[in-house]
Length: 270
Image 1 (cartoon, rainbow, N blue to C red):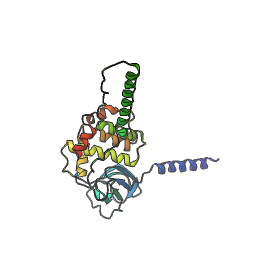
Image 2 (cartoon, one colour):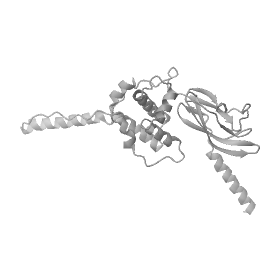
Image 3 (cartoon, rainbow, N blue to C red):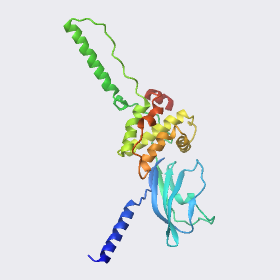
Image 4 (cartoon, one colour):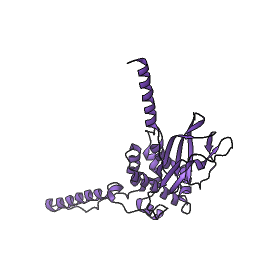
């Protein structure tokens, strides 16, 4: 193979690899980050416009490159309200000139909640096995108690009956742990990611007195809080960071959720 052919082949492989890494995520659920890479927008350099917590979409510019007479951008966005939005509505010119006439970059934000609901729903009762094997422990203790009773009847020994010890009530941490482990391993389905976020938001809205706040404002407030946002920020890192952290202390992240049982959480979130 000639040197020219080798050079052309290497160039094609590089272009193919770069294209494979390009992300074009134009749809996402509420609160989930998405990316639109390699977007060419005409005119002078664009930056993110000033925004508030009430904005339905949060946009970040991750990288900017020259592209002929224009510029090419990698964009990251998070939607807080269901609907269709143009990301260029949240960009302005760095030099202060008008940004009108930009080619739209439309994205769609959908909700995992039912169509007639806009707030986290009341928690559904769950089976004991999901809360740490509660039903299994009951069966095991019952079998042990029955074996002891039969031994007393047939051997003739008389001992005072002692009630079987009851396991501690399952906590919210017990419910969250399997969801967190699925997300950390990258094996979580979309429904599991949404359920984990719903539980975290519902818990901290009750604890931080954010029941009256809009969903987007509540999520932003929780993310900023040192204690409340620790697990939420870690989940986002697992889902969106280029190199997710591998060595994470789950016990420390779940510590705030051991002080309340699953039943108490249902009452608080309700």
